[in-house]
Image (cartoon, rainbow, N blue to C red; front, top):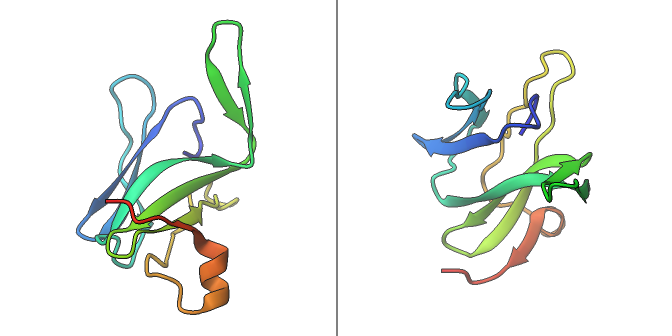
Length: 122
């Protein structure tokens, strides 16, 4: 997710907050970092990854994405709308910046900018 591109991160919603556990090798998760405040309990997290990167495959058939922006998608459980949340890293602390708005957008322009699609997934 951030800091260690070779190891995946675990995202979870606990107590309505969004938490990040970065992995640091086999069988080891770092301390939880608060990634999003607000109420995330009404959203289903969708496999976060990088948006705008370049995908390549090495000689062993293993794929890797380089570049791009780490991004989280979240589906609103009641409306089915899917939103994208780019994850920025603070250049001073090298930690991800807090995602402050888990609520649906409040105006049409903001909705068009954030909404990926509005599929009625169940």
